[in-house]
Length: 218
Image (tube, rainbow, N blue to C red; front, side, top):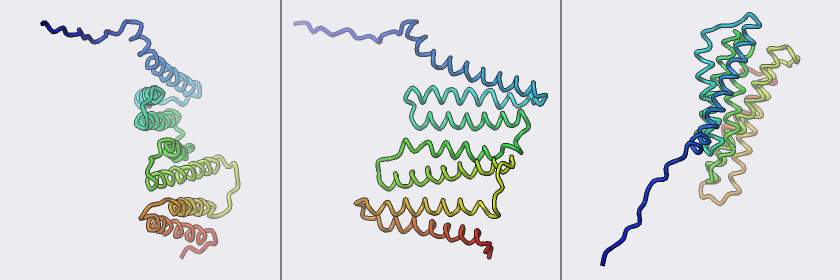
């Protein structure tokens, strides 16, 4: 009696399949280079072009494009982080190209904070981890609004009252206290201690914000 074995082989991708897989990456790279060309053209038209900034703009645009394509193909939180790092560094390169860092530095607060806030879609399943992640995302949202307020201040769009920034301390403290209080409803052995640990810094931040708003520095 002779034994027969099934023949196994690794399927070789056809040229059409290989091209289809590479198409999103090529398209992403093309869009990134087109964005670099557009930004460079605008800077040259404004007679405010710094050529050395291309060493920042071009690589970071390609990194952002690669992260975006990987994210759309199911890359997860790592691809999201790569895309945002590339986008933030690309924004820095554009500001350097135009020489507008003193005018647009609040974007260095807005963009990283927005990236952290957007990571909330990958929240963990553990109640404590989910609460901690939600706290970070909500604090990042407060930081986005703070950065936009600084940007409006740079352009003199509003007349802010003295010590207006202390309101954001109060908002951040409320976020921490609220997320700490939310832990109590979960059936965890350490829920009360975790809520107390979160409430302490939050209450101190709220009191400090109120103190600064009333002009009590010491």
